[in-house]
Length: 487
Image (cartoon, rainbow, N blue to C red; front, top):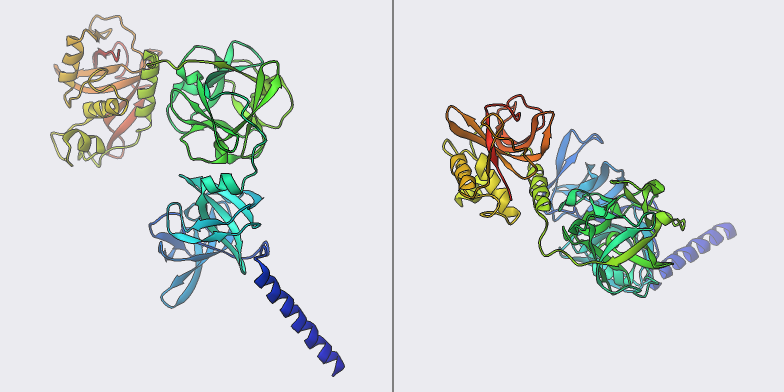
């Protein structure tokens, strides 16, 4: 009896201590504890009965709170509510998590959490909670934080993340806000550059010979935490650590502003007028790969090593009031290439480009859209009516270029002009203008390099298609009538 009484007393004491711990404050849950949360989007999410995500099993509704039991890069095993209790199945990881890994930080304040970015409130992070920071979505960042009995996945405002979770920078603002060229300490003739003067998310950041273009100019803006955002003048996109990676060799790209730590940079003096750029998300530095001085050498993230490959001179620069003509050509080519694969079904002409042109949904014969596509892209790039006319007719477009003294005959028809990126190429059959495309680069071995709307594919659909080596699209073919010059 004494032994039994002793065991009962110990059990009661243990229970009392556990209860006291719960009353006094939230303690971090076990590492393997389940995590509750909501799917990222507001649409139903398909559930599968297998990890291969091939056997449909049910659906999770936006209002359903789920329990995440297992996480992999491809799938999550979850338990979710159904009419008669709960079921367990598998969903795509990207439907519930922005990232599967992150770094832990201790919160310095109480912070409101949300079910999803911009959604309804879900709870709060307490001061002193250990929070795992995952990925960003708009002005919100997904986190994993402790609650009684486990964890939750939720979103917090990125401003709260920067103010109360991520450590403050020691940087005190050693440079003035302004626009600069970033000249490499490896060679004063080489600078940081956005590849191809691209204006799109994910465009690579590289080393390149100084050419004075806006693609090589960056605007530094100091933030309240002492870090800087660095935006490219040409695109307006932010200097960004790809995927907020934390390993040497992580790429540097440009990306639209998302308020994340991957777009915050600490500027530190390296002596002799040079500075280093350290990303807030990982503590790594902007580094010229292999310290190789050549056009196109990649710029990456790398641990501090005090080498010239990590030092940059910030030379004040003035943004050009207008992009150069070649920049305009590259921009519209990049945009048109981003549309490759978009099209109609079996030639029904039901496409977004026609919707825009006719200001209503249209389909059927009489709505060929090869020239409409060119007008649509010109409008997106701000050159409609100046670089490319607004018309659905190839004949009218060619006449517009002739009227403005910007039409050049092809080699077959007696011309000698070599087309360049941004020019329109007009095709000619049976005595009339039949089709149009845009030149993406100078010809290669006589073959035109083009991107064209309303081109037939093998599946019978008509789409935006890229041509690089087509027998009819050569500089000497009678099919090629001439070129409309963008500028």
